[in-house]
Amino acid sequence: MGSDLRYEVAQNAYIKLVLYSLKHPTSSVNAILIGRFSPSNDTVEITDAVPLFHSHIGLLPQLEISLILIEEYFSAKGLNIVGYFHANERSDEYELGGVAKNIGDHICRYFPQAPILLLDNKKLESLKTSKDSGAVVQLYVRDAYKNWKLVQSDGSIRFSLKEPSANLVLLDYISSEKWNDIVDFDDHLDDISKDWLNPGLFN
Image 1 (cartoon, rainbow, N blue to C red):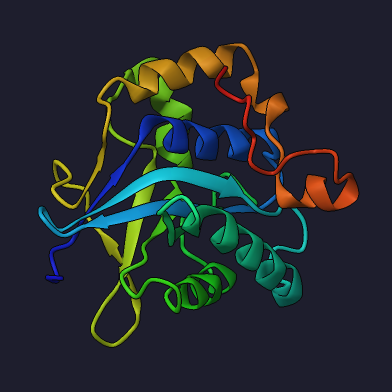
Image 2: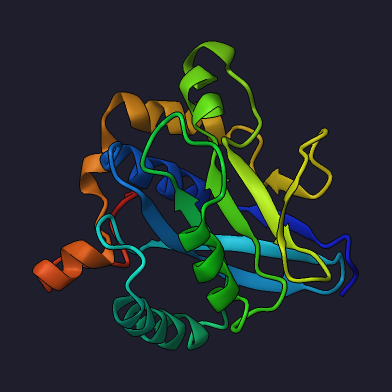
C-alpha cells in the first residue's frame, strides 16, 4: 500500500454520516466507517457507516463493546472497520480535537491506513445555496510519525464520493428531516429494540 492511498465513500454511507450529525446538532457525534481495501487501485472503499455515540463519546468501555459487535457482524460479510468519522460539538469548531485523534489511533489498530473524516460545518451550511458536488467532510490521515494531518482537497485526488450526485440526494433527505430515523449505539443501549444497523433507513 502506497502513501498515496485513495479513499472513496459510497452514497448511503456518506448520507448516513451527515444526517446523523444533523440529528444531534449541539453534540459531538462519531461513527465507524466500514468497507474494504481494493489493492488493484490502492483505494479504501467505504461502503457503510455505523453511528456510535452522541454523549460521552470518549468513554473507552462503550467504544470497545461497540467495536467488537461491529467487527463481528461485518467480518462475516467480508467487510472491515476501515476508519472513523467525527463531528464537533460546535458548528464554529473546525479543528480535529484530541478525543477524535485518540479514537482514530485506536481504529488504526484494526486498519493501519484508517482515515478520520471530520464534518466540515462551513461546507454543510453552504450546501443548500452552493449546490457543490464535493463532500462536506475533511480527510485526515496519519503521517509517518503517526500524527494526524489534514489532506487538502484540491480537486480531491485522495478522497471522493463514489456517486457524484450524492449531495443532491442528501439535500432531499435533509428537506424531509430523514435524520429522525437514525439510530446510534447510545439509542440501542437505552432501548435494545432499536437497531444500530439502521436496516430500513433508505427503504
